[in-house]
Image (cartoon, rainbow, N blue to C red; front, side, top):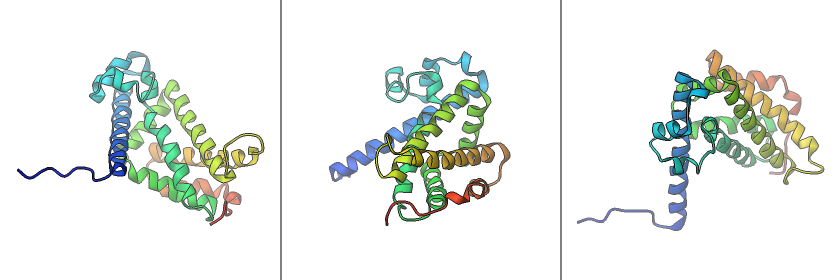
Length: 206
């Protein structure tokens, strides 16, 4: 019998585990969106989300604490992914780096664009989920501010946080209009970034 090839090094094992976690977060978020879209937030329980995602309630608690949190658990991870994507483009203009970073993050999500748009619409349609959508944006702001400032947010990073806040507001607005109005995400990003083009300056060092 020919042995089945497996991961050849610890790094590959870590990568496989992380891919599994990301796939599970996405499945949880999709399942939650389906339930909330059909029944509304108040009628959906934590146990129902777990069952719809095909995992146990104890497994679901590794990713979120409430049924409402399940709707954005993958978005919170995406905030860190965006900061990492922008950081890899250090030395470029900020808006270009974010524009490319957003598209990179969306491209790595293993879900049809229609699914992602629908999840955003569900979040915008129900106030408890809207608060979580905005909280994910706030997380993105803080992570992006750290990239701009080159250090953790805190005393002395107010300017970087304000700059990151303006950029993330544009990202959220572009994503919302993409979900609600159709069209292309790059097109909406370009429209929103044109309103804050004064921020399109190099950041960090190459």
